[in-house]
Image (cartoon, rainbow, N blue to C red):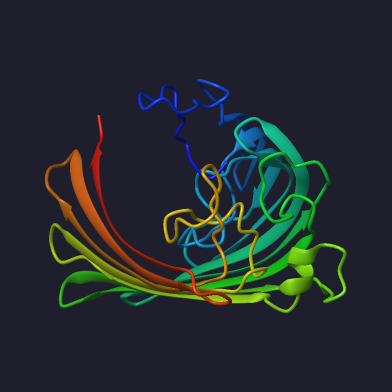
Length: 280
């Protein structure tokens, strides 16, 4: 559920994925003068400035309603009820969520701020989700703020996010993973990006305790630890340094260096990744 990629054929003799294709988007949408509503399977409708809380590839099945305008000086309210994915096809548990997003401009400075509550209700029987993430309840309060302006003629952006899981877990929980990490429930992300001409430079610092977010739905680029088909995207602290170049109108190249450690163990990750993105 954290990736759009499937192994259709492993030429080294390994196993291929159960399905050769997945319909991860199918929905109907209606846009009125001051509201938008959709039904079906769609991307996460709530505003965020990175994927450390929720990966773009994790699509959810249900309905969302947004009321208000995204124009400057207005507040937009977004709400929805959804079933959560378990791997590519299956569903497991529900998400009930609401968010308020405020946008405004003050001269050359543009401000966007959001606050939301995300109630994930678990259900036993998940086949793919690791560490009890399918059965565990999460009630996450998320707060995000972003400012944008030009500095010496270059677009510049600063961001900050804070997440706290409001669930009261116990050290005596029947689930050993929950009991071991019962008080690991806070996280934050700091970011800065600048665009000098065709270049983009960015820096992210992430600190996410084990149960601050649901690791089965969070971003799977920062770290690669987990299992062969699932990434454990929490219990991490570290840096991402990125440098991008817009080579042509259709092609951009993005390099990312990750320097990450686990919070509760000796596990670490140091990785350099280059993406070539071609639009056609």
